[in-house]
Image 1 (cartoon, rainbow, N blue to C red):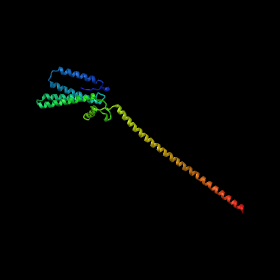
Image 2: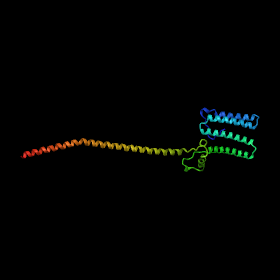
Image 3: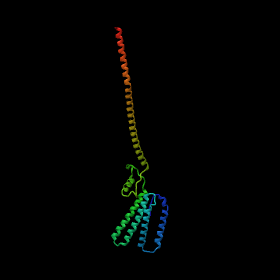
Image 4: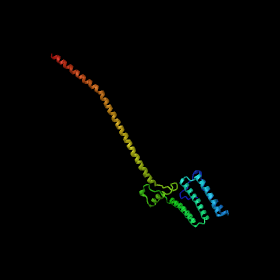
Length: 232
């Protein structure tokens, strides 16, 4: 039911899924080969079985990676659509309509095979678009037409590391600017504090100086008075 080219990892609670799916396949093959009914009835039974499987698949989602769940669901829907189209081809007598249905059947199956092929050849691509080769450019182009839930580009780890280093350099430069601003603020604060300290010291020394000048003037006046008195 699922066409997965990568390592399948189930959830812890869905450890039974692989065994259950294999047993269901074997039982379905044995049942369809043993019962003797018309091919249309067999196709209808197969459609019913696939619908039940799709419902359980959507409800359980057994794979750890959601991409694998989406691929399995897509393959199940493809089988249901293909069976329905084949039934329509067998029931109609219009040759043009039959040809149209056949083309649709071939197109949808080839599209799914192409997606699987892309998943097989998928490799991590450089983060810088200038370093892409032809295959990588094709991957980028085709990814625009496929949902990310089915096909998603992966980038090289070393390019991601370079981007991390680039972002870290930006952070370092920002930290340096912040540290420089804080240092300037501290220098300005220290300058203002030292200036205020100098002004306070000047205010304390000014009365002392004025008092010294007053005392010296008084002494000079007394000495002059004594000198004039002696002369007389």
